[in-house]
Image 1 (tube, helix red, strand yellow):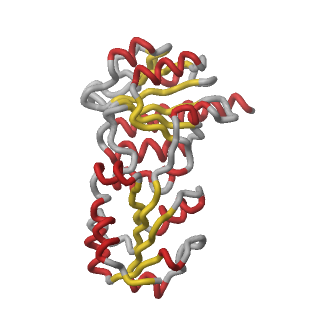
Image 2 (cartoon, helix red, strand yellow):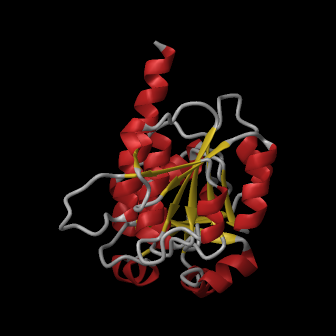
Length: 262
């Protein structure tokens, strides 16, 4: 282990911005749980910085050379973190290269989750966690979504970011063409749809598209959908948070798929 250098401190601070993450193909992992998940899924870790107090009372991550572990005081680590509360350990990691084709290479029946132009990083992270929990086979973020490696997305996903193939910054036209060529049913979550989500057939090779609360889905996504579904709700409520809507629909799809196997 070595003391933190000014050069590495500046590098970490720069990765708070999307521009630096894209230019360097690096992102930040904050917190012990998330770092262990990254290592579990073979994410390439370049450096790890931990507080002096953390190093004294915790086991350091296995599989990382001690030459790549740096220590600093609690105050400086707080300044390097993107959170208001100290995370005690921060890693610099390589952004994995996931092509759109990887989404279609699963050995299981395709169960793809698509976020179209969802800009809130917390919602993106929560949708990723839900997708993994419901056994989705892949995730696609279209152009206009929050950056996949935005620190808030990474934190909200809580380590599940690494458990599925995820393609990002994909044009919706390109994606819809690929889905049609793969004979994957496109299911759009649309508040104006007449079919309730729990009355629809959500089994088989399917892709579920969710749009932002403010804009909803694009006209192209809606017109390309083989089925449009909605969530019945109290008439005094106009809409649900998109991450909650995704959770309701994806769990219904998960249950239908489980019952099919029995």
